[in-house]
Length: 98
Length: 453
Image 1 (cartoon, rainbow over the protein chains, first blue to last red):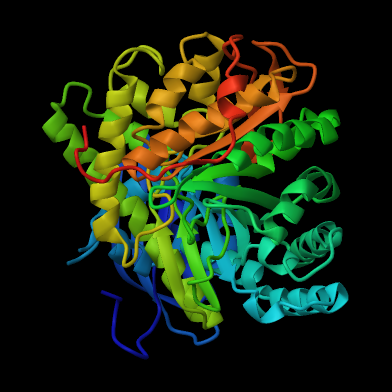
Image 2: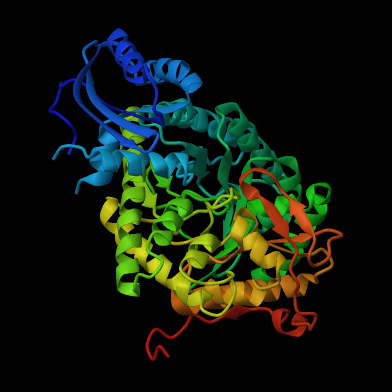
């Protein structure tokens, strides 16, 4: 049920919701790169003016931290009116897979 | 199977919009190795044990909460019933031990500790009586310690002497904490069929058959269930049961994940996941609102008991599959002051004490966070406890009474308790006396387990 086998890289789900505007994806991508996150999958949807995005990524660095990444993303995106969350992928496998 | 963006949106809306959280991560700690006939030694051992087991509890739960971005409302500890210490200790030791545990709770950063508990379902022993007599002083001297008394069980009957005494004790606790609306009673509950692994307050304690230390989780999520029900306004009961079952599964899985992670990081075995729907005073995070979304104009009107029974069953079906070990109380809670919908239903006069009592026949616990006028006779409170115990006794379920006779208050008054305890609404009690009935004394025999009509 857990993502990957023993010793595999920690996978995370980054999700963002907010008003569609220029630069949101660029900002997120830059911060992910700074924190050593390799993007494995990305999906984006526009519902009227609201954009919803999900990125599945994996930490490349051993000392990486979800908390620090979450903080950095929130600091950068809250002023743009974008709600962002970083969660360990295990949450989703627990909740949505039997 | 790859992740679908709709699952991500659903999960985020649960937390951001529907106020989903884990109500509590509760560490159960056995104090059986701390018994001593010298009170100073017992106190020393208790403090040492609590520090050694729960020293990293709060930081660990917080770290797991951040990793999954799922809020955990409370971190709590449940301990071996304190009454067991008092058999071998002089009277007066109860308050000292209670203070020590309460200081530890503050030091460790936990919100509540449960376990100022006496188990007297057949009869009260020396230690039980010492603890019960000390409750008014204990509730004044502490702020995070919770007390509970088990006065009945389906296998042993109801200890009516204790029921009678507790009417008076509850009044004394209310008077001792009158400056805060009798709030000491919010940390005190009387049970029939108490559960030894319940992670919820005020009734948590760590039963003598439990492990040295374990991690249990109490989920929450009425807001999430309400949203799911609102999305299918015309669904048949068959469809509605499916909808609630599915959402209860997801909610419970998050609880299971929290338990797995916290117990792994602390190296402590898993206890149970309690699949109760626990409301908060926040708008919408309300069990009453779920019942109203199912089609009741106001919670408390005709159909409410059926709606609650339906909800409770559907939640259990989803939750049972989602958790490895389900335990505790596991059902929908109906604490009046902690639920915005219950508060307004009580204020409007639709939700009466009598209807609440009927609802407790099918919900997870009993009359919970119910406020009555401060001049309610002690015997009437004993009568209310006896009624709840009878429901638990006959139906082989846990029932409880957490009642606050608010000093100086009249029916319709609002009493702010703050935080998760919310705003109490003072409700009317019947003025006719039951004193001659409850003061008979003795034991109410255990029920017949056949001929169940």
